[in-house]
Length: 532
Ligand SMILES: Nc1ncnc2c1ncn2[C@@H]1O[C@H](COP(=O)(O)OP(=O)(O)OP(=O)(O)O)[C@@H](O)[C@H]1O
Image (cartoon, rainbow, N blue to C red; front, side, top):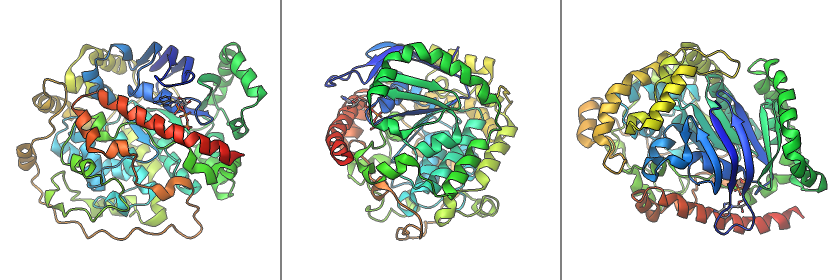
């Protein structure tokens, strides 16, 4: 059975004028790397939102890792989401937490032991090339570095699925290459990646599976696919393909599958690097770079909302302090109890200190993930945050299925797990104990208690250095589009109202989505106008 399966799925928003998704049939296997492409408004984000259970399908069946999403009660949604990692265009970092704390928080909310957190965080930061940046706050990082933190946070509990909505949308080509290196490396550990993107250059270089949407329908599903952004200009041919989609899809996809086996795992990254270094940006880049503002913001719930958990970070939202670039200086680390990288100097030596734009392309990213990959994943297969958090049957089924079938790197070779994945798995039992104590009757976490933290965190923390002013973009780097908005979050993720909605569970996502639609409505006319 496919890891992700959608059967005749449609989504009609309450105020939508047409279905955002219309009769979608899609199977995604364990270890796949899938690009979702298509024009603005074609349904990419909606599809990801359904997988995240931020939205519910109007009709049809969606199964993710054995979970029938129709059957997940609202109070279990936060737990379900913990089985996924997700990365958004605008990073959604907690601006009043350091790099270390942002990543550690993702583990805290699933009840991971603090000793395990201290072990895992440096490893995942090394993986994404951020060793040396542990004490920096988001506003002290470049856009690429912020996205690396977001990826580290999404990946630190080694989810079997990572969803990414235009993760390079705010980044220049060189920085995007670094992000794709990290995502490619993560995919090679067996994590299934579904990534929405407009970036023709990335899609054409990586040659992964490409699922193209048009007006809410899948018009193309191609292994080793490419992407021609000319299709951003809907024409009669695309309309015709939309109509014919149901006839051509099976043959097209099957015939391309054999090609997938012919290339080594890093060929796509090598091609992307060549392309970036040659300065080609593709038709999308040339045509749409000035219009980036009109396209999608990163969407979805911030970590605190998706976890159904609030703690100190809610102060950030409540105060409306959403823009790391404009935020006042972060508080001294006296309140920093999340843990501290006592071995940062050691890591800096190995992973390379991440300074400036070099940090956006860590040469260590591949290597370190590959090492973890080689360290194997079997123990992680049994780790299911849903099961840990709630012990519900669906999650148990999921965990069993994962364990039984093993995880593949997409080439068919499932590998057993050690290293940091193993450390995480070993924390499961203790973590489950902790978690059960922290999970209230509503299925939400109360988080690590102060006394727990005090007892476990034996390493006192030195205050971080005062925040440095944001570094200007390096010469020669093209900061396109909404990079200028870096660190800004849509109001829905930053409001006290949103925090209040956490307590109301899935209700938060409903209003959040409405807000998003409002933005969409505001953006679309501008887009149309400017294209002309
Ligand atoms: N909350 C909502 N309410 C009503 N309609 C919505 C809502 N969210 C999205 N839509 C509509 O659903 C359709 C698909 O939107 P979606 O955001 O999924 O497209 P997309 O392919 O991700 O676009 P983009 O590339 O601009 O992010 C669009 O017509 C959009 O206007």
